[in-house]
Image 1: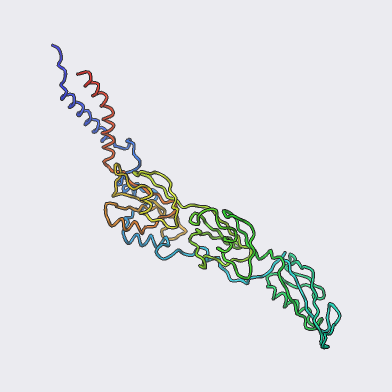
Image 2: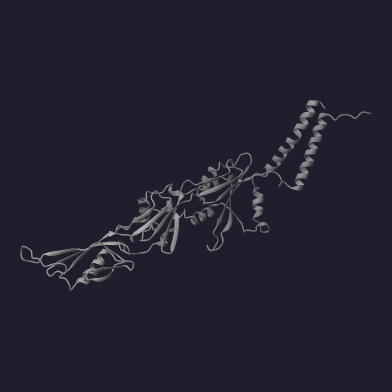
Length: 389
């Protein structure tokens, strides 16, 4: 007796049965083998539990208290903490040192040391002027003058050197008056290098130039200030700060000292976007301060098709307790279904090298599985339909 062919309805039921069977097998073996752009919210939370948390991660929900704490730690709420100010030191300006060149003039009256006495038209003694050839301060910081001997000059201002010369000539010349000017000052300079338009040596004057003055004298930076870091080396100490955070006349706008070295380094701030967004990339801040709301917008926001808007995560290292200790991995969670989160995100500051992750919706894996089944069986069903079986 010939076998009967199954009806079309029967064939559909067979396909559905196979689909359910494969779904059951997939559920037993787990969904980890399905392609995905990252973990779900449940998997991230599970990863912070003690039995799976090898690096000490902590989960923090973004709320008003957390926003205030993060803002204060980032210097957004109370103003940036001074990073260069600890290098400040008092000191005289317009001092000289080894290698500097001086012009020295000695004025005498009456009995002179460097010339014969001359009387004026009214019979009184007239002054005599003696100019010395340019004098260079030696490696020991001293100068030598006729009839005055060795005079220590390093670390002194021109007026202090003039007073020392007058004391040396006292008793040898009648009422000597000395005028000292700096002809070439090598010690009263700072050095600027890096990403500036004109690197080199910059002379300091009695105006007491500041850090931003020196950068301006060097022609400014080659990039926007928010992408630049300024590093100042003073003696054995060094500090750096982002240039856009240095305000004119502030404590970070250091009064420069001789020998300071200033280096401008181009170092843009960036954050990384991963997960269920329309844009997976490394994105530059391109501004002084960036908020979480702005970062989500630059990433294109959660994808309508695959994202879980209740689970937007920010990964960063936070200082926990003693700053000398290792920084603690922290995950900040933002629920974009809650309207209040949009206000909180406007005050949550981003930091350089943050990782923004938008989690996948849990239903995505089921949808992907159904799509795989459709791709597997659609050709078979279509072929049977065409053959009329």
